[in-house]
Image (tube, rainbow, N blue to C red; front, side, top):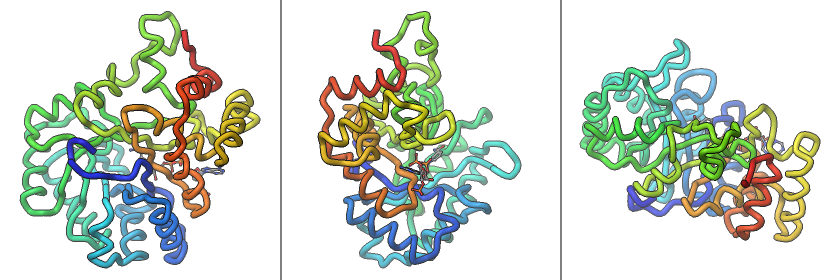
Length: 304
Ligand SMILES: NC(=O)c1ccc[n+]([C@@H]2O[C@H](COP(=O)([O-])OP(=O)(O)OC[C@H]3O[C@@H](n4cnc5c(N)ncnc54)[C@H](OP(=O)(O)O)[C@@H]3O)[C@@H](O)[C@H]2O)c1
């Protein structure tokens, strides 16, 4: 992560779906992640049925020792008021959520705090005050955003003094607007429609902001990206590459994202230890240019 100056694994484990898992299952999931080289764990105040539920499941099941805590990166998010349907980047909301996240996670510090979704009423000075107080108090080391456009990041940077280290966006082999739009620019096709504020991937690369891909196995249209019935052409390519590289289709879905030179970090959401291992193995597969584009075309995107 260039703007944080820290080394993180190319694949991270997202914890949005762990609420119903037992402590032993969460420990096994964590162990599988660590064995697979994952040092990065993504959470949010709103994951689970009640506020801070998934953070509390993680913190409670693992009860991390201080030495283990030092070896991992804990990222969490704030800014969504889920039960009332609005966004809140106010000083009071950010401070409250971080304090509650720290308690739920049973940790003294959060490595990275993301603002979860852009707040139309965002006031950069409020955000800046919260970030500065959180950093000065040793509660948060680094700050980032999620689902933000370049201009929304610029707006925050008017007042925020800390570097924005990450922007977490939805990206999978089929939900690939981020990388597909640019190659169809100025065309009549729907693919040319700008959905990310324009040039988000390049903006992040230029500015040292690490892009993170959420829902890497979801199609974006409901269901999984690895669905033979729905995506027969794509799966033919994926299965062929899985055989060629001796990995599973999940690994190819991961490899397609990690192959991008923006060093996009894949945020896995599986709760299965075996799928963690299988998917994480994709970070070691380096697809050729031809293979990367073959997946893009088979997923239905135009390569003009
Ligand atoms: N910033 C944001 O706005 C935002 C939004 C959503 C999510 N996120 C983050 O991104 C993380 C990942 O999101 P996600 O959970 O949607 O990721 P995902 O990895 O795309 O999907 C995981 C889900 O797909 C299932 N799955 C994966 N591969 C499968 C297969 N081969 N066969 C059957 N089921 C399969 C998993 O089931 P099993 O558990 O049974 O494997 C799990 O239910 C979340 O944990 C969260 O941290 C962020």
